[in-house]
Image (tube, rainbow, N blue to C red; front, top):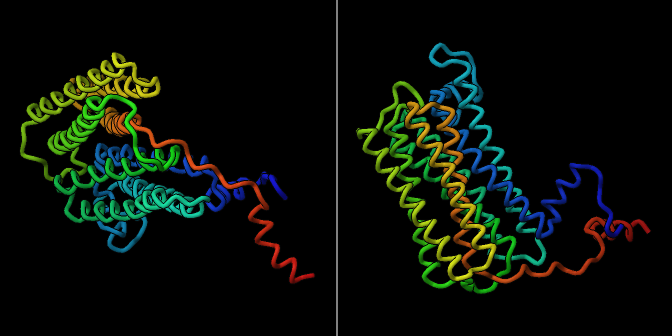
Length: 335
């Protein structure tokens, strides 16, 4: 029985959650990161396709049905897009529950990881409630902004869990000079400010999610310029951090994380300028939102690379499989 690995994919999937290894937990945490980044992009797709009120009520899609039904007020395509985004929420929730169960079942149990994992399903439920408020307020720009900004917060919690699942529980020890740690923290704050500015641009621009949705009463050129200024501040801080890391001979993996962030930022900047000068086509908006999620992930990876918590706790010694232990009492009773 020892060391036997099932070829049944459902059994293997169950074991990832119910009998997790540290690597399995980290893989599930990464899947949660990907799911939360993806739902940010699909949320943007709902907006640019004008499907924000495709399902005009919440939690039902219409006043009489949980799923899309024929209605003269909303096209079938818009209803399908909005309802599809709602269904994706259940996938992200399932990932969150799986991560939480795996953290509970991991041996030795790591209390810090359990607490971080608990955030995943709870935050998805909270986000779904805020999404309902967005629909019930007819896509008011303030509620839409709150709805979007919850996503980077949830994504940050998922990234923290992913990173922490691959390291130890020791006291955080800086691996670079303290000035660079401060610079990394400042960069993280500016990137979050960039996300906030991005929601204001979106709430002012042409993609309201529905023709009757309200917009922020700002000049789009002015808020776009402010957003661009913060972009350049972000790139400048990233370049300064990368230069500081190289001049102080920081660990190679830290320099690599900073370089990855700079590359993602530059790619995101290209998308942003192209969409601005081409009248903000919907496809590029979706790509830009996905890029924002990738910038945020890369920024957090840089921040956590600046310190070290030691190696992961060793796995317990190999012993009888869970299946063997579970069936042992029954076997003895049968004898």
